[in-house]
Image (cartoon, rainbow, N blue to C red; front, top):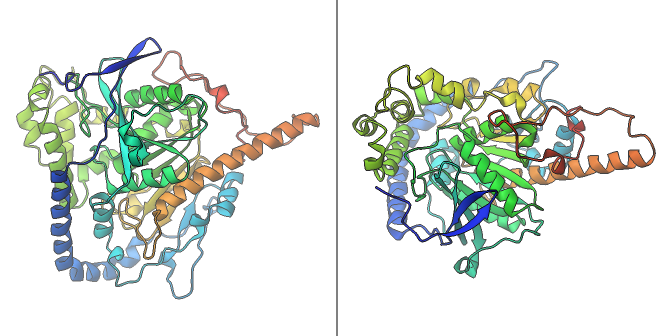
Length: 502
């Protein structure tokens, strides 16, 4: 079965490789939209029936959901602004290691110091409804997408969907190499579902002058599967080539990255492996899953677990014949858990012609795919937006690595009491979701901070004081771990001194 003939490609040379491009609008078919409406309606009816029970359970366990405040020396920077009549749980907390950049963010990011006001009777108090709203609720999005198919070094294909507005989607989009507009690279969840949350983020980014582009993994979101290979959960190889291509297309624009849900595992793996050579100026993770191995083993609540498993099976069923050359498809499609499906795709129990010694075990798989395996090598500011009532990630006391945010100056946790998983809808919200506003403010503030640091450094050099003052010395930035020579020229991107870690 060949999937490389679904379109007639045009070709464009880049770096000795061939990049296959095809332009079209990725509008969602009406049948799929109808199914999403039906699914959303059924879920709303179910939650309306269960809501009284959920309220009783939440009332009994509310005290155990709230994270205890830490008053130790290395306690986090917190912004707990409240408005009269609201409880402490309505406040937004910024948890991070005290630093110059943290102080700057608290001063210039208004969303960080905003209390999220949700009446107790409002549906937004339900984390499940928040999650459903952000993932499946139909949205009449004015954004259209122009797709680039990117041919990788092993002849596989990934897709880059460039967001455009209005009638511009009828024309082939060619961004100018001289454009200084920043690029917003969006990594959706690992299951490939383009959610309402992602579409709203694209719309907000366009209104703020960004060039949003969605990264689609092999076989996901109608990307042709040209090789018998799927991307492992935390393998950043394909993303690295996509970022290099974006840098080639937009050499004058800064690159920012946002990931959603389980897609954060790929982004954190990429930032950890490439360190300061990632090409990315700043990054953000919306409702990330940090402890991914245990998440696959325990799974989210049964309803969401069943929905994610079913969606992944439907997507993979399109490639059942070709995947049969590599894996035992009977085991794959009879999987009853997310762990069993991941194991059938990538571990020895599901691969054909592989012995236990020839392929990796479940533990070995996560040694190479755990998003936190190289977390200490991340060298750019990363904002993580999470809620305590996230039904997908699970109990915040066991799933949030607070020690990471309290000890690593590059990581910032924006924690809310309510918001579900990638929901964060608030009563009376404007056209931009609160979490998206927080992310865009974070990018603007970090950019302004770096620019101010650079101006101060240049002024000190003019006064002959470049050797004075406290600075944070650069780490080694010469290599990405799995490449013999890193192709990124970091000095053309990061010419600021990392004094924000002081």
